[in-house]
Length: 426
Image (cartoon, rainbow, N blue to C red; front, side, top):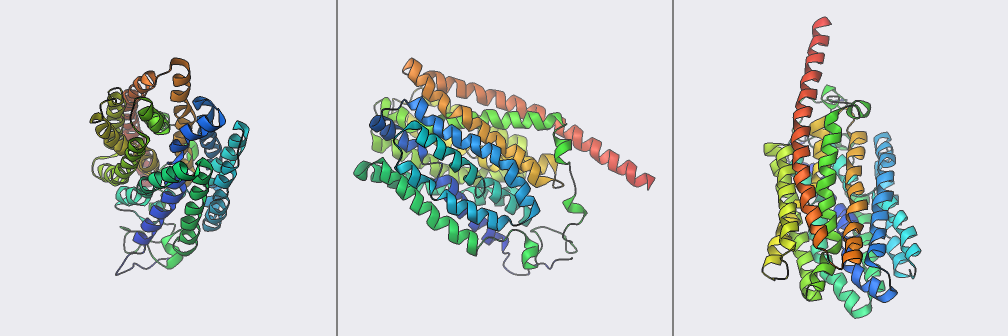
């Protein structure tokens, strides 16, 4: 079937807005506000910081195992229905947190949290945006996933105020209500999975584009990608960058208050980081569109590494906003880069399944990155070593990005030569 081209306003930009709202609720509200609960919950219930933040790692573990499942479900159809059901159930999880009294309560709920959030978060949005855009894909992805930053920047002070006035249990309840109120109507009313669902073609597609034509079959299958050195190199690059970002994210509020800053100042810095993250995602998408994946990876690694180093001097209030701005920009790598790596390094032939595997790296990084500073603090009484490790990870990431870029160019050259030989034979 040849789809028609929309002559006026392109509905794909509504998809970008819908993605902004979905990621704002599922990631911005449900994930990016979790750090503000560390200190009030541990002080109230007597948990260690390392032990408590492990529940954030369990969210990441469950999400990691759920991603391939959702990748298959999305590929087979009924994606909108899957997203709606996942969002509906996800909204109930923070209500469960609000009644928890034991660590294992948080752990069990965290597994549910992680499994459900993968059905309506950045992976889902990235898949839909990839369907709607052939050109400006990086920019569109950056805009669509930017909601997680700006929503968190708005909700961190709100939930912090609720915690201060009513306690952490009501903080979780506000999280639940606000996320559900955004997710359900957005998925139901705005989301359309493919342009062909509306008789349209992707942005930048040729006039005679046919749904399922050869342009949708360029690249490598999942099995082929798993045999490519560039797959493991770029996954390692993402993992190390995201490890550093997760280390900072989970403990920023606790660290800043530990070294003498007020809780209000610390929460305002988290809000600033989330606001910068919003523009960082758009900026990273532009960098990838203009200069490629490796350049985008380098900018993320450099900014996160700089933030980690500056945190060592964060007792000086003037240093903190600089570190936070660097961190906020670099953190965009975890949400923008996986879809761009999947499409640009491995093509559109088996995008959804490859994307699910690449996205798992951000979950793996969170599994280890979020609790590690907490355990270091429990042992040493300081976060200093954690920041040194984070900076070292970003340096390793740049090396891996460089190697991945070189290997991937070789793989595509070999693929084109093979196709050319096949065409000559036929």
